[in-house]
Length: 510
Image (cartoon, rainbow, N blue to C red):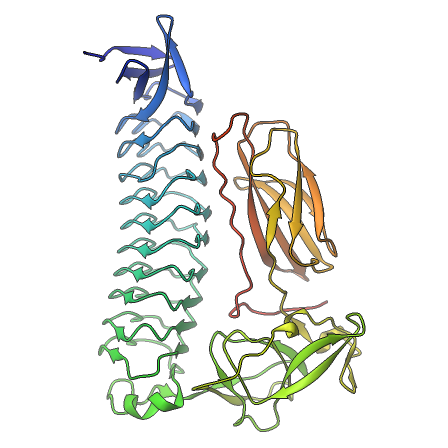
């Protein structure tokens, strides 16, 4: 049976693909905000829209926004390529794999909500766009080659916990400022973050087994990197040209394989920090012998500060510095301190030291693990027999924030009830975002539960971002998606909860 029957409805051209389904084949006459319908009527028959043809909207400079319904399961390559006025995409489709070039060179595209079913972003799918922030859905497994290349304004990507692979050139020349990769990631491809000139810190998790050649080539702002013990081979030029790179912490228990140019053209003060048991073997390699060390410099600006590192630390060589495990007491008005000489990765401590004095700390071969209650210590209270009279005497790392909502999906105008696993810091706030637009901001300090009424407009989704502001600095504690739709399954939930990272910079309590 032949189904090819073309028709035009609301400036979109369709072709029938079965008795009850159609594909959008041409949208070049469309303008403004385009809402692709779930279904469309022609000749008294209703057809479900299941696909968008390749090149369907390519080069259309009149469209400004696109909404894709949950009925769509296929989006062809270059579907919206070079749509120069396109600013926003809300994708509620069932697409699992992007084919490539879908939004390439959409130079004004700043906001994208990805399909909740998406598992792979294709080759150059968003290359050359103006995206500033991206939340990957829980289903995501792979970022394809050059997928976000030349996204110069993309400063923040929230990776889901299931992602496994970042392919070659994936974020080349992007604007990423920090990189927090989940423990699920196994592969970081060649030249994947090349030329990310704003990238300052990187922590490569234990799950990574492949780090490609030139992965961080000429990331000129990169200052420190933590590399897990599972990586034993560093390809040539991995960190070549990282001119501000002063520290790489390698957590392996044996000598890794290094290339001649792995650390070429880095900072003059660069140190390749390893465990004491690995030091002697690396000192025999000519091109790193003057860089490899088993102790690293540490200093603090106040007498007391909180401390945590993503690797085991030995304090025995730091004369005059005292490290404590802290336990809350007296209803959070004071803490009791237990001195320690070494701790395992991620342990929260209080450090007592002479301000602005440089100490040498060592990476420990083996260290005990302690509870991290130091991360929830209040300030201005007693510490043992010492009273901290001024809040400036101590800095504070915020405890993990884990969020849930009372339902998976909401109707426009519904009330969302948020629950935090712990009571939030007293200066905590929440802002509700639709794309990059802040819809509302609320004070939620000291709360564990709060609610928010969703606007009556059916925008299909929001992001709730919990943060604290200390002075002029902000620290994001968690984000979670809020799915709003008028029909079940139209906009799959894209919630993401961020956790405390031990590499985060403490913000001083004001």
